[in-house]
Image (tube, rainbow, N blue to C red):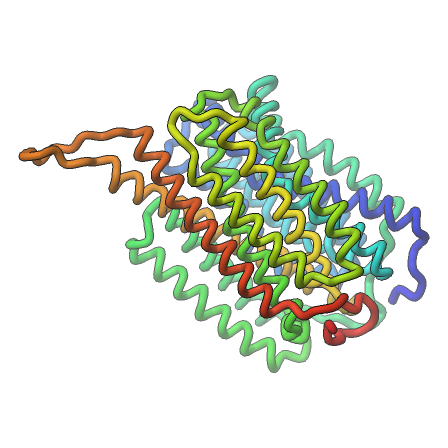
Length: 487
């Protein structure tokens, strides 16, 4: 068990190391998206199979998150980070050198496996190393900004690498991030293994992994088959039942995979809901805006990625100057609901995108407003969701944070994309008087599909604002000691 806190400089260098690891994991969700067309030409796979390059990562990542978090507690955070970084780098190298579609999909799945170990260990390291409120607020502002902007940075990096080098570098570039992070982890992150015995809950592992796999698989199927598909709902139902059994088992297990004491706190629950809702809403930004900028406004992949930088800048500004200064003074309650309202306003601004629009007048304002809102959500919610956690439970609590975001992102992908596609098909075919044929206005129909999806995303942020206002408690979280109520 850790008895003394590491020195101040050591803590901040450790934060740099794990933030690089978090950035690598976050950007890999989107960095491959812009490269898909060229990868498809090189490896000759079908449009129907293309989605598996995204789904394989999400399935492995989402289904193994709880296991990865508990292994972090069992092996020690430093060991988990080293294994995760080396494994993620090896999987990325395999994907970058892939000559067949099967190899590339396998590499993406392996990235998800090691990402499920890496992400909880990185967050657990920040949770345990930063206990003093002001330092902790600054640390989570940085960590939250990195994680929250990962999707946008992935689009930028993917566009640059695809245009200037090769789609293969969208995977191989992870070697650079992994080596940088690994050096920092080896020098500045301590072992972090609790002296008390921690045993692995095998039954809980099977129930959680199978339940999350079925849930994420069902959401992934909904993207391509729609919500009317029987197999989609069967998978979602099986996942839901298994997760219910998982919760029931955790109540009686002697060594629970997810100790329920972690999620019973009101503010912690509200923070997890905030992260879940936000990742549903943020999906609309990274996907629909990328398509709008490229297909409607005609920008190149590189320029499209660069045009997301104001979102990253606004998020970093909001997280560092607002959350870091205010969280230790007022707590998460006023910050997160306000961030949700800013997210709602940003989505509403995006509903006004025209077919003949311009970036400065129609896209930039929404990016800035949304980025400011996300900075107020990610950093305070992540800090509050892990407040008061014992070192022995840090990995499990961090896995819960990552799982909330992963499931939210998968749900956002399936739900908003399905809404946009169905709406586009419905309004794109207009019956002419006295005729049974249809006249299709593809651009207008597509933008209308985006608009409806943005309205749904705005609704999620609105619901999130109400729920977090009532669930989050007033005051500053107690970051020390055992699980104590947040006052």
